[in-house]
Length: 126
Length: 126
DNA sequence: CCTTGTGTATTAATACAATAATACACTAAT
DNA sequence: ATTAGTGTATTATTGTATTAATACACAAGG
Image 1 (cartoon, protein in one colour):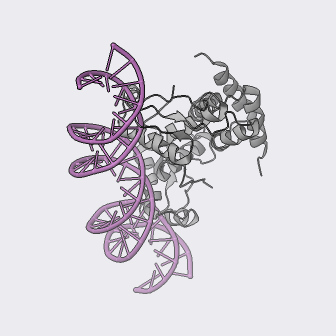
Image 2 (tube, rainbow over the protein chains, first blue to last red; image 1 turned 90 degrees about the horizontal axis):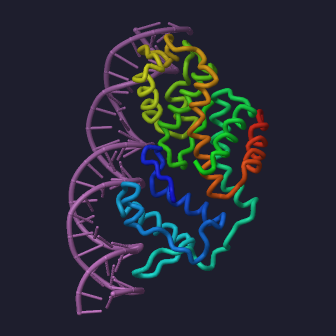
Image 3 (tube, helix red, strand yellow; image 1 turned 90 degrees about the vertical axis):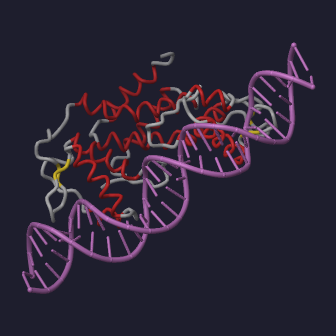
């Protein structure tokens, strides 16, 4: 469900927070939906449960998640179920900017970058 | 010359290492070229000199940089001046992969992503 | 009731990233 | 020779990320 890379340099709990935010933004996670349990995610990704819990707690502090004792975390009910396309494009912007910077430093043209991007995006189911 | 973001989560010295590697890969930095001084970069980016030095030292350990006492770091002479397009595309791949993941989670289509990517890339000089 | 499953608090330990303030060895130009 | 400019080593300190091992309070189902 999530992609956590322990070697990317980005803290694991931040990777998870970003991905939950994005899936809520798109509506793949809807208000009321339960998130995977802390222990399940921890085992699946070979990570300490407290690392997952830290991400969940911070998302709750943001108001994105609801917490009920003894139950799984859920997407906060008062949250808009799907953001506009422009809002989602804004969330994409950091990844765009990073790619553009890398492409310029590598002296790769827009056409070349777009080509490999389309190849990567078309591999939907794999 | 470089773009260092202290809030990205990625360690500053790793950001710098990646960018030097890319600019050598493209030939924007050629064998024998001098890098900006540690102190200059540190001041420009409001960062500790030792953080820059750490990046330089690790790149020297990789064989990418040459070091002469009392002089600026230079791009290693025995380094191929420009990598092939396929090698540069490989270096771009992590940024592509990250963008693709984000786009899927945001449920943005290839066309939508390509559109904003082209807009961002066409802002060459600003 | 009891068991299993929620998230979380606690304490300790480890590792890493970054800063700060000095100091050193060296080069190059004045 | 002096000065300014290289990178680097050193020591100390701070903050953060992560792991580990327990333990707690609660919910839900048998």
